[in-house]
Length: 411
Ligand SMILES: *Cc1c(COP(=O)(O)O)cnc(C)c1O
Image 1: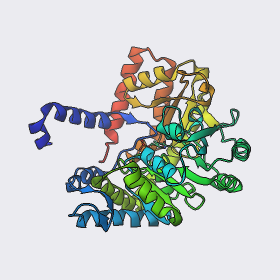
Image 2: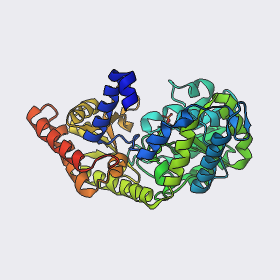
Image 3: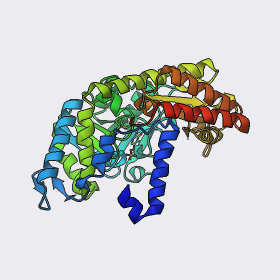
Image 4: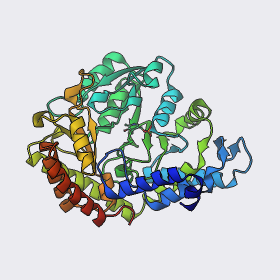
């Protein structure tokens, strides 16, 4: 920090404040995680300097001897970890990875079938605000409103009537396992490519604690900063027949230079993901989410799909008469960081956000277990029942802080 304090004391103060914020709050954002310190170290390493275009051995600038080895290592480790035939570690983000996959095999205007955003899908799956919907003709499948599960019969019917060029599975907000085998069968019936976006669950897949889509899909994409714990950046896994098309879709198709420091972080997290410690964190992540969803059910909450098979617990707060945004703000005031989330009941009602989404990744990385989950749910329940009670907020805020001190980040 000494250099930063010298160059920009104002920014140094913000960076320190952010470190304090992470240490002193409970992170239940499903799309975040605490990366190991070594990931933060390599991200700020000498690899920031190098400009690289192209692929190892075929670069457009000299001086690539070390970054070529780094990228080759990241690819080799990812192939091994995920059982993939082909890997591209250059995408800047999950959204860029998705864009490159679309542009690798689709023509402008081609039809794609993906999950609807209010039902759990992602912006980059053809939401009207995303460039993906301006380039391709997306249609969307939904979850069954009673069960909260993907309506596979609807997927099949829609696929047969639309004859899409590609079917996309994977979600931002879906607490259950996806039947990749069935989705792949449906794609095959209509001769569509099958892509899986496992952004949220990549760490769970890497650890082998939930099923992997890789053997069933033509393309699998993910980002490294969610359950994967590896910092920023996207990755594409694919069947080897798509290798050259993906390579050119990423560079020069969608990107210029890639971030060599992030290639190094990817190589590192793929190594760490083979260790017992990583697997233990992912197991804990699953157990913590299950306990959290049970505890909310016991307290009369509407847990979407009635539970969870991954790191997410999604709650529809309609019966508790508290809007998602009020819950988010009241919880933040006591140091519990969550996000409001659209739930299937909000579909077709723009602006209405009746739910919250919780994730167990970051608390598990800190070593918290079932006792801590019980306490957290109890506190969240009290706060959501009385979001404007300041005496209650003071009391819970102190308890949250004490819990944070017992479980430091990257201890
Ligand atoms: C988070 C997420 C992404 C986006 O990744 P970025 O790295 O933020 O672009 C893509 N797809 C899904 C399903 C996600 O949940």
